[in-house]
Amino acid sequence: MALENIILEHEKGIATIFINRPEKLNALNRATIQELHETLKLVDENPDVRVIIITGSGKKAFVAGADISEFAHFSAEEGSQLAAQGQLILFDFIENLKKPVIAAINGFALGGGLELAMACHFRIASDNAKMGLPETSLGIIPGYGGTQRLPQLIGKGRAMEMIMTAGMIDAETAKTYGLVNHVVPQADLYSTYMTIAVRIMKNSLVAIAKAIEAVNANFVSGVNGFDVEINAFGECFATEDFKEGTTAFLEKRKAAFEGK
Image 1 (cartoon, rainbow, N blue to C red):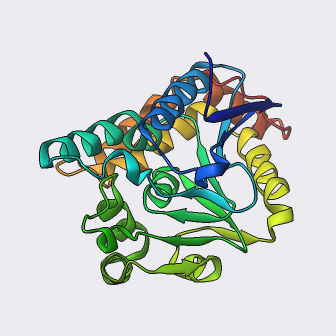
Image 2 (image 1 turned 180 degrees about the vertical axis):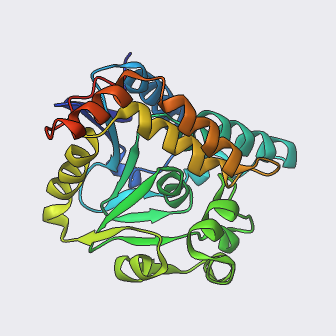
């Protein structure tokens, strides 16, 4: 697969996906969204990959929004199609991946960039990061899930203010809001997400996939998250990882999970 806007690195079970459009501050266009989808599908299917990191190339931007030049002259129907297709193949796709996906926000995460980070399972930010949804300043609204995920993460009132003012918040404010889990110096971003990824990899990938499914169920209309949790909990008992985990505990040794 030839990649023009993405750099993929794989190191000891950790796949790092760099969005690489430095001349556009890594802005998302349709080609990049498609490449991200294909790359994520590839690493998700790779049994050697246990954790996925998404970040931006360079030191200025994670993703500084969508590429406005692509849709400036769209009709209402074309705009709806753009949002629906993007949500289907990338944003919802990431949220429901069975492998953990971490956003490493290394600079500006605006508009579609922040929506991309919010679709990941959690977020780490460098101390120079700035985040916001500036769409209302362009006469539109967030279309890649921003109006839904931002209130889930930081509450309705704060989300309304961020969307209505189209303003940016810094990394420490984002941490206070609960939008990001950690804020570290930019020089420490790599070591931080690698350390967390290694901690995740020590656990059962099967159980983590079930946990992702159960947590996400709480935010799906008409789905009883408790029922999903109960079923997922029971299904874990039929896995080899459960047998290994409980046996290792009883034998007072570290478990060696195989993800089965």
